[in-house]
Image (tube, rainbow, N blue to C red; front, side, top):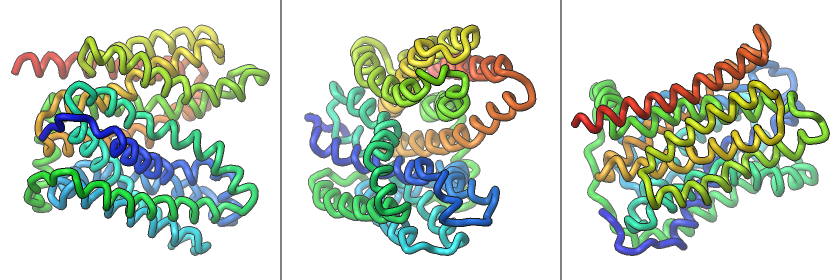
Length: 387
């Protein structure tokens, strides 16, 4: 089902819900250095306060796509917001560490519901003309959310403590649930799909990942996510101190600006997958520059801008490659799955390469990942052309 006009107001509301979904990661990341004071003595288990969400994303990404298509996209979005609000509210009560991890696990399921249902609804309420721009806007939700948390969340924490950030997140998610429950009533409900049996799930994974249409955005996204967070983590120490703060703060913004300007412009003339391919190619070249000049500020910003093309166009590719809303939901679920996998393996891999080998080994690995993303998209494009 395609909308004849683009409902930008509702798209912005759903995008704000996406900021709340990204904050389910970001609210821990931005205060991670304070979490030890909240839970002293837990040692390396503290890392699970972040990764618990990613683990469930790896396991249940495609399952979530099937469940969302079965219960309905509007209901799934609002329900996921309520679950997220409830978990953040519980986290604000100073829970024991075990209970806190349990709420993070449940919050991971809420996150999956949001990142599958929200972009599918955005594609539904966008006209063909504006869908690329709308999906590119959605692709900025992670970077914008982290920036907002840094600008507004950290001052809140400085004044009222870590638990206040969880409480604020809970209130915002609850307010969005109410607002979107009312706003989404005007969106036509789509036919629901039967909920797959547990025995059917392995076959469903096989069907999705064998499809060069449903799997393409997810396949590229694996290599992108393995690089993006890890680069922001391992590159800063190589930047000269007088430029380090500016460059680290500007890199996510350069990615967003590139996605919403150059990326949107390119989508008017070429297919989203071609923009993604261009982004991977430019990212590989930028990384070679950074390989030869470690920590160079200009190379860092060009690299971030190049990755921005991958970011937005990957989401825009989903409705371009998949005409039915069910296939789009499955593609979103696969993208969530591979994205969590990439986030889970990227940073540990780069840190290990730096510790065990050298900067060159790390830079070479990142370059290889970018080239792999380009090659997998070229291969899948050939498979689609072959029918």
